[in-house]
Length: 402
Image 1 (cartoon, one colour):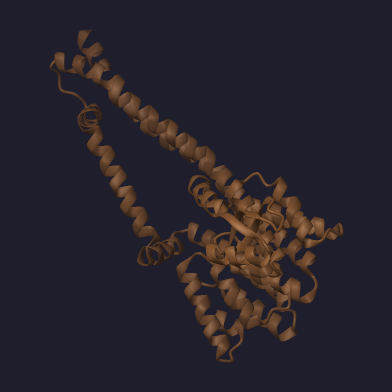
Image 2: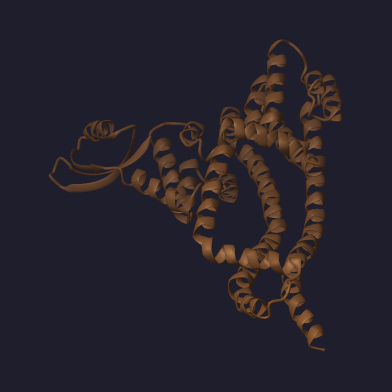
C-alpha cells in the first residue's frame, strides 16, 4: 500500500488537504469520496520520493531498525498508544526514506491493519523474522516484550557488523594509501629515473627492469588497464550475486582455513538466536525453523538447514537432523537434541548463540591485532622493492665511478 496526498472540497466548498492509505490511485479516490469529499488532486509523492531517496541513500541499515524498535518499545512501556508512539518516532527519524515507510505504517494502522501486517508490506526493511515476532507479540499481548527482544537482537547484530567494519577499516586505508604510493612512484618518480638509466648504457638489475616495464605499461595503457579492471569488477559482481556464483562462493568460504570457521560461527549464531527468539515468542518449532533459515546467508549451510526442516516435517527431531549435516558441528546437534528431550530447547539455543557470539568477538579482536602488522609488512615489502629497484642502478653507477 501507498500514501496518497490529496486536495478535496468538503460539503461547504472549502478546500482541504490530507493523506490517505490505499493500494492505488483509484482506491484512494474511492476512499476520499466515502469521506464525503470531492477530490481535486490525488498524488503519491511519498512513493516517488521514497524510491528516489532509496536510490540515493540505499537500504535502511540494521542500526536504524534497532533504534526504531527500541524507541517504539520505550514509548509503549511509557503508556503511549501505538499510533501516537509511531507518530512521535516519525518526527524524530532523519532518514527520509525510512520516515516515508513509517508514514505508510501509520496510515495502515489508521486504516485498521495490524502493526505486523503493515511491517510485512516492506520486506526489504523488516525481515520475515521481525514480522513474525511482532505478530506473535500482538497475538499474545506482549508486543512491548517482543520489541525489546528484537531490539536486543538487532543491537547484537549491529555490534558484530560494526566490529568487523572497524577491524577492516585500517587495513583498507593502508591498502589505498599503499596503492596510491605505488601509482605515484610508477607514473612520476620512475619515468624521471628511466632517462638516467638508459643514458648510461649499463645492464640494469632485474628488479629495476620489472619496475621500468610496469611504469611504461601504466603510462601508455592506463585507460585500457582501468577499463579492464572495471569490466572484471562488473562481471565478478554479477557472478557473485547469481545463484551459481553464490553457491560456489559459499563453498569456498567454508573451505578456507580459519576464515571458514569464522563464517560458520557467524551463520550459526544468527540461526540459533533467531530460532530462540521465535520459540520464546510462542511460535511452533516447524514455523520457527522455516522463518529462521532465511537469516543464514551462506548457501551451503542454508541448504543443509532446509533439509533439516524437511526432516522435521517428516517427523524427525531437529537435533538428529543437524547431526547428519556435514558442515554443522556435531556438538550443536547434540546440545539441541538434549534441549529437545529436556523441554528447554529455547534456552539451549540461547546458550549456543551466546557462546558463538563470544567466539566471534574474540576472533574479531585477533583479526584486528593481526591485520595491521600484516598490512604494514605487505605494503612495506612492495614499496621497499620499488625503492630498491630505483636505487640499485644508482649504487652500481657509484661503484663504477670509483
